[in-house]
Length: 207
Image (tube, rainbow, N blue to C red; front, side, top):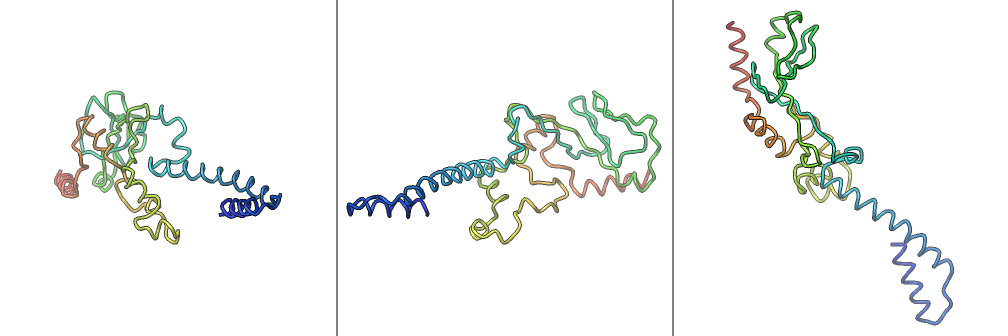
């Protein structure tokens, strides 16, 4: 607005044959400098929004490999990935390379902890910046950061949807890359359902 108003005023002075006001020239130079700065910041921010990434995430993104803990049915084992079982038992070690958890010397968990046990497969994305697990597509990324309605885009009176962490599946919503990674490791596209969890707990109570 300052740049446009100053340039218009300077143009009118030139049209009327008056000498240019030095204050207008100074205003145009300063407004152009800060306008360019603000424009580049805006373009960078919009780019990060469309990628659903932060300034920190973008650093070294081409070499990043994300590790995803994906819930799988109890007792799942595979040579393609490692597994980890929660809650961790006292004295539990790290994962072995063949996908088995080192719990030979672990203290047995209480029965109620056994009922709450969950098994997770540790999956890896590909490097080279090809797989961003949180990429929901341009439109989905925009809504996640800016809001779901045009009013949210213009008036920041409500929290951004990405600040909502009530989901039990992930801290942030995950995109189609998750199912792509699951498929690459031979896992079904969806996590175990609540019904399968009930069956697991029922089987544990019976044993």
